[in-house]
Image 1: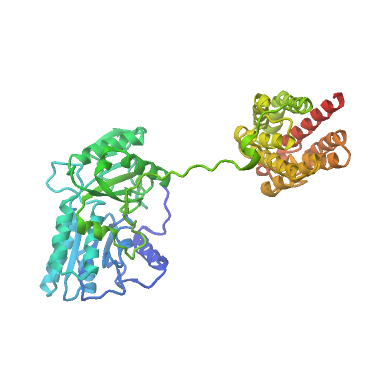
Image 2 (image 1 turned 180 degrees about the vertical axis):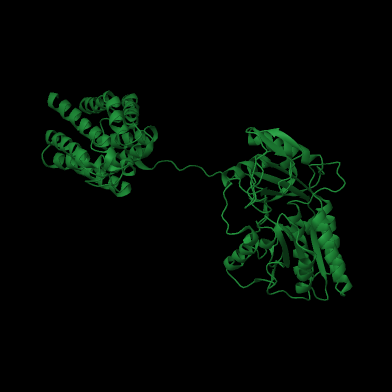
Length: 547
């Protein structure tokens, strides 16, 4: 696996300094004991209040330093990646922020953290400081284990304790509330990959179609393998196991945590699945989805729930200083706003007939369908070989709807063709031609002649598309054709379109369109879009001559 870092030995200290350099204020600081002592703390801390200190190994960012600030942690003590901080580091953190009101340590239930934070607490007490410790063991993956792991549900305890500290409550009250909260939290994780540690070789133990349920935040194996399947089904498995540990008559807050590398798009899918599951019946508040307690780049997520009462709800809803914290929000179904209906005549284009218009449109569409293969061959020399198919698809769509077009109204017909092409052609060419016909329709409705209206459509198309004469696109044929149409008529327009298309073969470099992404060695042929325009004008001119 590839990672962005300088040296493994300095990755944690450099990351903490990166955090401090980018928070945008002087609210946070660090102790000057780098690299052995890695403590981030509030620079504005009032020691008359109970300090709230947590921490653990690095690799869980933004936990824990990202949650230091008003209303949450007073200090965070970091170890190396996935390694508990030393006793000396924890003790230094306690000393730095603890006054007569005392200190609450919040510790995840891992042996290293329990021992190192525990010994630091004993040493601090020997120095005369008041220290209490709360251990969080919220992971339900292994229901029969004597000491469940502490995972993302720990963040609920950070938030509740930090809120009470900010409110000036005493140490015994804060510790009691934190311990009670910890007992009412359940968490469960799932991942599709293990994490990789910078500077260490990585072997993914997962099979191609395997995930793991109940794995830890340090890459520990899950309690069981689970087949990769739809998000709804994976969430349903988790929801069922979590529900057995919840009071169905109580309200809960749900934390949806990204374990590191799940894209935001997929995390929103997970959130939707959870809140559409039976588990959601007891969920009143949500936090996330987002990366809150990660496992480096693990491609997984975890769900944590805490039973609510009035005090906990108030604590979770209270604003905080750290930007990394995701504010709790009440659960709400998606709101629906009625779609606006088209205004004016465009809303009611009634079918009508005009023999000349029908023959002209049919002739152009049939010509474009007939040259589908040839256009694809041209496009294959400088693009992805689909221009003919794209143009023919649009032409077929117009032909299929010919009986429903308002052919007696030229402006309405142009607008209708624009609508058809926007939905049927696909790609940038469909959008560009839809802009062309839509703008031309508006100009024609405003009193312009047909040739002036089409030039107005060209102006809007080039404005949005960015191409002009010489850029090796359909514009190289369309612009001279429309100018000739305005000055001399349809036959001259067809000739100008052909000359413009032929000129694209001599252009050394495309400046717009798909051909702009290939080298000059692949050009030297007529641009397929320009060729399609020339063929369309040729068909129109031929039909006009026989009318």
